[in-house]
Image (tube, rainbow, N blue to C red; front, side, top):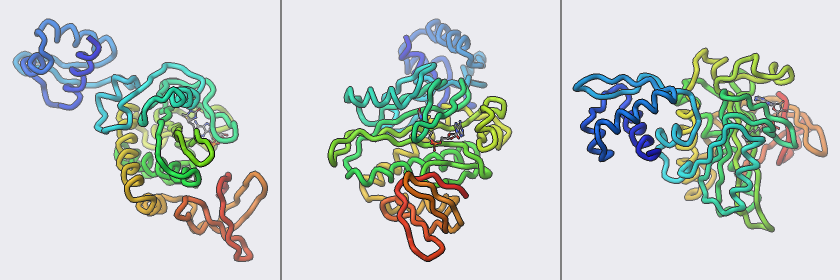
Length: 324
Ligand code: BT5
């Protein structure tokens, strides 16, 4: 039943504004007209507005903004990423669930998505606000065969992919702030958290957590992030279907990830530099051990930030917070 509804939904979504005839549907799903009507009624209950016209068939006029497996799969054209989707309405953190699934040997490309996180986290235990029904809060399991020191490259790969997907879906130009922020008009719209499961030099899994403020409004943010944060809706004035964007992000990551595994970091580095916000600018850097000030010169082939201080000395920054 569920599978059939999924298949029907997929046909309708793929055909966009074009009507799909009852005949076409019953041929492809191998079911009766009455059964189709039953599924249409169920979809309408889920919030789909479906037009039904005699002798023409059915088409979707509008669909609800949901991030269930159903909604994402119907839009997804990737081969590996997102083939296995775990959707939860409310969780503490999708990272936690993805970590657990990864230990249970779930395959590469497994995606955990939640409508709400009650304990979403950033780096160094900082909190990540994830209000219900407004954003993309998801974690992706990758299993690349790469040495440990190359894993930061995957954060940059994810950042480039998300930036491209945002542009494709909304037309908004975002910029990347090393290492893991994506900004629109200077305000944080996306945060990326990359966590590892590894032993000595062998990487078991890289869990890429993506938090993206899609339809979040100013009131949804707590006082403390209101000044520094924004969302796609605040910037564009329009709502975006989260499932459309999730599908676009997974497709972008899949293309770049394949390129990365086959040919290395070269193309991703170029793309990253094209979207980078801070390169060539004066920045302040706070690492675990020191504070530095200088000009961001670029990133190395490993994805490490190079900072030139006022004495002309170049520092390699592996992990830090930066201020602009
Ligand atoms: C990050 O950390 O930016 C990484 C955030 C990753 C969140 C995703 S959501 C799915 C997955 N599951 C999780 O539990 N996490 C991942 P960091 O660079 O440490 O930035 C954290 C800081 O960003 C906070 O201290 C706030 O100042 C700010 N912040 C918190 N919530 C925000 C939001 N929704 N939008 C913009 N800024 C926010």
